[in-house]
Length: 354
Image (cartoon, rainbow, N blue to C red):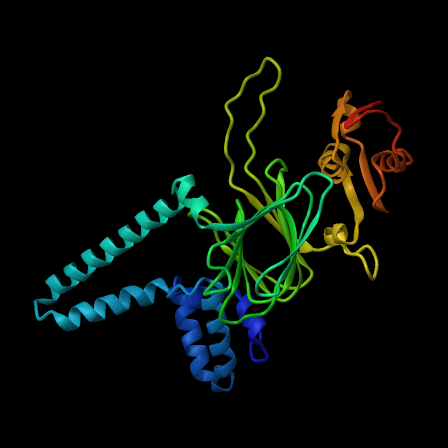
């Protein structure tokens, strides 16, 4: 049995049953928390603040059950007709509103690219081997890693603070309780009031991840089956993307889509001053039990090169390494101390063989 009598605001926010209560989507949770609040008046102020923050982090959306109940009460109050007809009318209108909301959501998601371009006011891009520091209007600081793109959405710091990200970035967000900061990515959205976190989401990589250094963030998965995850400091969420199954030689198979898998772990601390997931912000390259095939993308972005393997076995070599920024030749020499392989460099083209 969980003892919630000593919960603070963050404890309530990360409690799954409390999230369902705030969302109004689970009757058992709503009933439980209504009874809990009644029997624990000493926690009313903390719970009220937690609910307020939940509403802000979830985009100020009123719980669906309250929307329908309010709609029902308003309609029944204004109409002096038989009970059955009243019920039928408010159900029809509620269904129409929900249908309209669904159509609006689909239109927003499937809107043409021209509409998307019109709401963007600032774009920041980095090439391979390049990193940028960006200071936003609200004082928030973003470090953009190599081969990444950040778009600032129109109206930033007026009523909302929203950005789009492709690639990797470290965010140090200024706290503004009435203007939550939101990061949109292809796989998930991140809601935050003020905190430091890292997001890595390269389209050509099999995983995407978010790492929380300090503060509190709420992650929302994309799609109709997306759910929310609240992270605490030192936690990391890894999303395993839907990948098409590649056909084997002479054995063509139909590509299948699978639901994404999610793993929640703690970040990797190298020492007292270095965290592996954000070591790049300190100009350090951290490789933790990764195959050469996985390291390939990191090296290509870091040193602005293209790597080609001539042997499948070499791609499976695994490395754990830690070193400051060096040139690509020094990096490859360092990896050679762990596994034997040969390499040839011609300009930006690198061929690695057994």
